[in-house]
Amino acid sequence: MTYDSQRVVSWFSCGAASAFATYLARDKYKDHPFEAVYCRVQEEHEDSLRFLKEYEMECRLPIKVIGDAERDCSIYKVFEERKFIKGPLGAPCTMVLKKNVRKAYEKHNDIQVFGYTVEEENRVNRFLDANNTVEADFILFNKGYTKKNCLEFVGDLGIEIPVMYQLGYNNNNCVGCVKGGMGYWNKIRVDFPEAFNKMAKLERKLGHAVNKDKNGPVYLDVLDPDRGTFKTDVPTDCGFTCEWKQEELLLKF
Image 1 (spheres, rainbow, N blue to C red):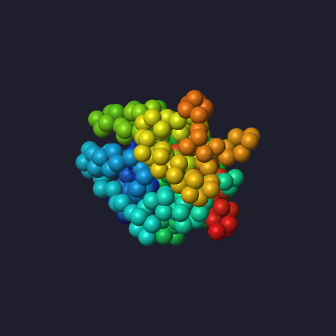
Image 2: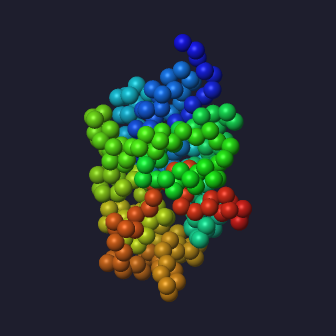
Image 3: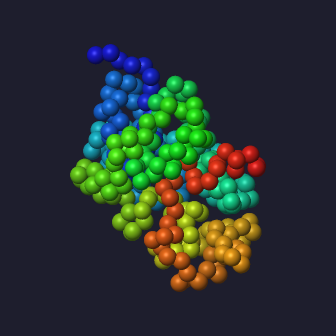
């Protein structure tokens, strides 16, 4: 057997897709140095770490936890520092707490594994456009695996899925993701009132609202509890790309 010295890094997010991708990648790259790495964000549900530990034990695979210690891995530190939450080009949290952390960790010749599923062709294309020097393996996308397949994989491991999935959210993002719409935030209001109120206070402090309509900003502290539809207002998975052009966003600050 020939041992290839090219390192493989599988980016683990404590979501079902990255868990499945990491599992598949370890077998695919068994002749390479292999690392599973998690970029910690403080505002993710605390149950994420329970899921991580159980995954480590079940799969006998250590997960390395890294993060932006200077900002306590916190989206609120980023927003206060930038005096900005989100706009037409996106939100700075993914860039600062995930993409920059990834770039600081990666080596120029790494193979990097990302857990995008077959439903996420647009995200794959956006990543490739913005990261054309990265040798990326979209192992789930390439094999045609769906989000449903990923949840089934976690179930087959015998690990309880993260709490956010159990509550009906379609990803394991931060509790109170600024990419969510009015329906999403009204569900956060019910499920996590402290997170809702914390973001509402930050909006007023910075003068930026997470949501808007044709009349302008819609601040959370005046958001009608009946506005929005949760199933259509949910944010996308938060990974190393956001819904908007993160590189352009960074240039503004």
